[in-house]
Length: 359
Image (cartoon, rainbow, N blue to C red; front, side, top):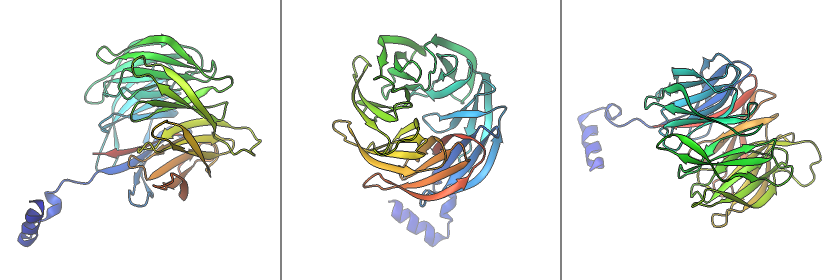
């Protein structure tokens, strides 16, 4: 039917561009803490190349970025100003328009929406706590903090599971992961039983990734320079570790800490960043067991604090915090290995990379 309509319109001289839906576009947002701004790039989805479009000034050093499930709004932790900001995303050019700016509960190291996009969850490294803000349907962050729960020092990340029933908060200092029950109707966290998952000695879990089938949770270990794979009990919401694998080559002898971790959209591969070795560690994921197999490391820029994979799973972008460069890689669809395709000068102290495909 569509082909016949298209043929008729071409014969009639009608411009198809004006009546057919526009294609989705992809943008890359980069927190530049050293310049107090968010840089906006457009991604060419065919070859992964980036074009700088504009910058948005903010009142402090930007940190973690997050998008709502529908990819309409961008949320930012303005760490030095102790604020949260929300922006609408213009699908035509990726431009950000400020919607709201509210006080955070402190210097938030990490933010994430719940899976329904109704609440903003936050973790506080220095203050040792987690908090919850309510989100309106138009992307507004309501200023009232619904809940604050003290945890322990160095709360480094916060993320719900795929079912939106459980929330996990890794802590580097005390070497534990706090396990919470999440009440999405009330927007409230409650300590699970047991309330913490204890990591192996000297691991210090930092960030996490949850498999699409919700069977496995992966943590990169800041001090341990490794990734720990855990089984997630769907009934209790508790974790059980079954593998820890190094992110480094066997002959590396220098200092190193892990920073970020990402699963590919397909779930076939997992990546973690090494600060010191300055690389992205690459792993294959066994879909049945969740076990990881090392694929080696891809060299990257100085101190890769944050990286992100595009939603189609074709490209990975890693920011070097200490040299202001962004490394772009193509992901091999068969092996999951990385091939560097470009390097960009993005600005001072890039601390977060977020790739967004808008509808």
